[in-house]
Length: 283
Image (cartoon, rainbow, N blue to C red; front, side, top):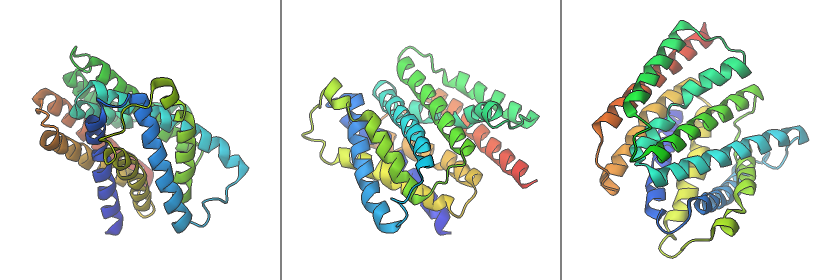
């Protein structure tokens, strides 16, 4: 029961990320904001991981290349997600981002040599229908929508490569992912400016700690007892729901029925895909 609670709490924390980004957006360049988020995320993970996992600093040199690769992809994902939030509503970004399971399907075919079944093809076609209804090329939010789609692709590649390298999602590993993510984005404030920090002393730590470090730790605790497919299904259901509710309440974002309909089709297709994948694994 605790494992399910960990996953729900993790998605709850993640669901606030778009809200915090929107509240900060006008005062800090988005590339700089990624750096600040990574700083708070890493410091939180460094402190917590060093306390609860004594093996955090005992790593094999062979693991470093994986940490660097995943750190790079996580940095790129954060950049795409954050910039998307600057150019599109929260509901668009979140729902389009959750196309990632279908990109995992494609990457897994080429990288992991996993078979693509008729059911997988069917769910992919249904998800594409949902994406068409979402219409990421709509003029008023096109840039943000395309950035969100790019984030879905990068995150799917990250997930696939982690499976390919058989990377263990241990608590200590998250600190190393956070470190190399930070290394890749640390130059951003010097390139794009430091922005205005006054007025953001609550939102910045909250974005890096609650919606990043804490969310990652909670999700990994859930993964220790639950199948990856189960946690993915829970995330597919809860995070978009939470995020859209917070955006409507806190940011007063109007609900776009077309976006909600298309996103719902994408989410339901993703849930069915994860259930099918779990069935194949069991059999």
